[in-house]
Length: 332
Image (cartoon, rainbow, N blue to C red; front, side):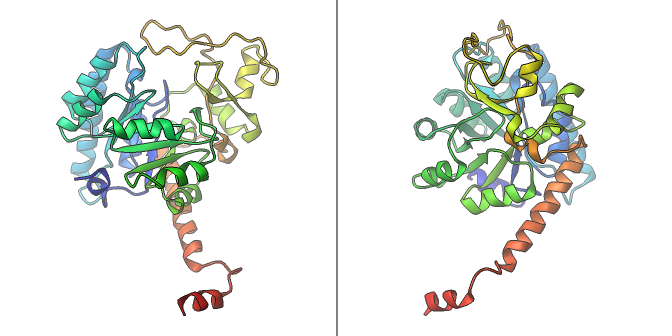
């Protein structure tokens, strides 16, 4: 059974809450899943590694309790993000725990590892890999990933620079499997637009930072809802990988976001001994422009569902700009 076949009829919205480094915790994952969207978190958010074992057990227990209480609308499955970059010295331990708990969906990042995919497939799990270009996309599928997350321009945190239109079109030319599209999404219209473009899921992160369940400091949440798209900067100085960050957080750290020449950047390192040079510089996508308040995750998903339904109704009604005679001519 493919991933899409497995998920048929199990979601309220075709949406994956993207894994937010430090921020995503069981409370947020459970709130996402019990509201009908795929919730996720990075394995590295659980520190030490023993906490990941406890968190996975907790998530499964809470979702099972929800399903018992709501058999007509069971929770969506959850996902764990594994950083497969060679600097992550916890990968084998985290992977073993994901196998132990049979995590339904794994999101891999920063490298494609066949042995990881094989371990997940062995118990019936699925793997989607996030990519920023076609080279990485081809490698991920060649090495056994079931699907792709296309991280396009405007996405929060580590992100690419390509237009979502171009990136999705190029990928669909050769890949017909599951695709999630990321890039400045914070409205139900965006979810429908991702589907219309050919994606199976929207992939949304920044909006969930501004939720009550997110493990982000209050100043971070306030900065999210007080910023606009022009307050986002794209740079590789923070982690060694290009990503989008809030300019006000750079200023608070003593940096000039409009003049970063000469600033010594960080080297990519996801090991347990790493030191975060810019720990108070906060990631966010251009979708901050659509976020105005901090709300419970369930309330955010309620809003997205209502917006999605309204957008679908508007599209189904057809554009008043279109002359229907052109359609009759084509049919003839």
